[in-house]
Length: 325
Image: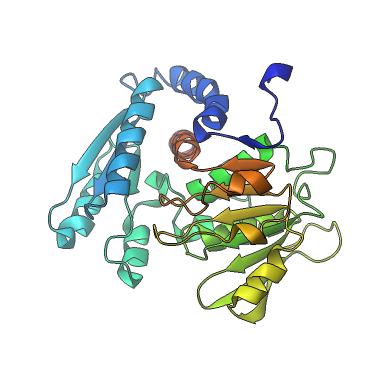
């Protein structure tokens, strides 16, 4: 990155600018796979919820895929009760390299079940329980020989990459400790994004306050630089006063509340904090720009880039297993 492209304080940073950092890397990788995927890897997306935000995400995904040499196929499921059968069919189809599902669908435990229906070898979103367990325990590989790389859930990974781009990670520290001394607030504790994000940031050394409508939890990895799994402390029921206290000296505030009505209180943002919104709704109003040093209003395009990186990693794993067998 040239000096003229350097991040300036008080700036709004678009996800497209961050995603551009990975476009060349991904495109070159696809080119190296021409001998095994001459038409390009195939990603299949399943849409069964009629959500306008999911429609927009699907459109971005298709455009991004095609610009980087991938193929993308959107499969609309009119009756969501047939979605499981459609996923299983794609699992069995050797021409399909990656599968993603636009959630929420049922909005309950049935969605968590569907996440496990997607074959681990094709789960580009990184939602399989094996990937989650590895993430929570800082396990980087799927095998003892350390040949098959595990993947991370794509939206939490995208936010980590955005924080790296914004120089929040301290590259002078060893990998795995580069958020040491940072305090982060994450307003969302969904199993798809909020909770894994809090764990990832804590595993990298940050103190993380995980906030949802019920309570506030503190994710930490201890007070030393020792590389260990994070632990969680319940700080009590949610209240505005508790949120304000958690934000008082926060370095980073990340929101993901799926509601147009929700706005993060600007007065809780410390001067100079970094603010990131990963919800399809606008969780910060324009006054955020007066308090935040850096503001990222959306993360979707970086998420798509991470999803495609995950897909390439899964293809590499598949090919290694074929060679081994």
